Length: 319
Image (cartoon, rainbow, N blue to C red; front, side, top):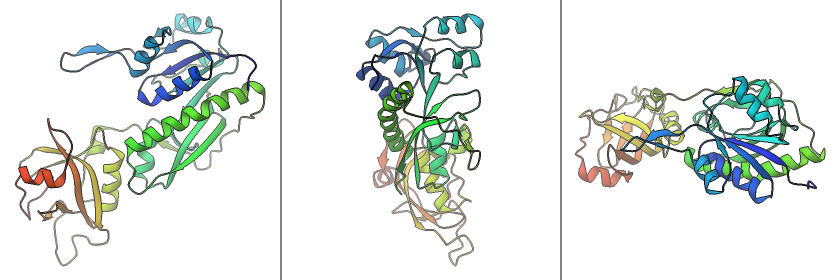
């Protein structure tokens, strides 16, 4: 335990960062300033909406800054003038130049949602599910100028269950990061933790996700499509097109048969509805049962409820 509260800056933007911010405050450390992404237009009125971190900081009376870049000298001088012991970074969204990284006495610590060096980068939770990983975790990293390449102070793993989706992992890892950050920070200050350099062996990057990544390509194996559905659930959702062209989000599915493809006796073309009562779809390899879906402008619903209001014929094809 440190003898005095540390003076910190907190850099973060989305909901994922909130548990860590609260943990630092609950531990009695001083958050001198919060940096977060500028408000974005949202909702029907397209009014600027502050990030979740900004809203929380303002509620707690913490000074907030929302620069669009930290590369200019004025922004860097303002950061250095805070005279920080450390900065804590969680899903902030801006690149930190060397002048920012070097300003705090203990440097900048990042809460990263993977077991580094695996899944460095922007989308570690989704990429871990897509790859079929059986575990993930949180790494507390001392940042350098590379992309998630700095030495690791602390890490802890969690299993990825067969039904786990990105939303569930998001919440689990956000709470885990909050639990690890205080002992990591205080251990570094007390000289009780030695940062461990990352090995380049096993390093892999979690590339940023694009809208096209969400589309269900029925030519792919059912096992891969089920992972894709979990990787984008509950938001923004994997998508397919119904026979009439309407876009449908798929939020949960189950692999019924993994080994049977279009070359099987049924000869079903990928995307074909092979059971209209239970929403079973032929894939490039295997069969997938869609269990929870969402139509445009509607809330999520079980497939049975969807089929009561939408006529889906056996032999029709999703695209």
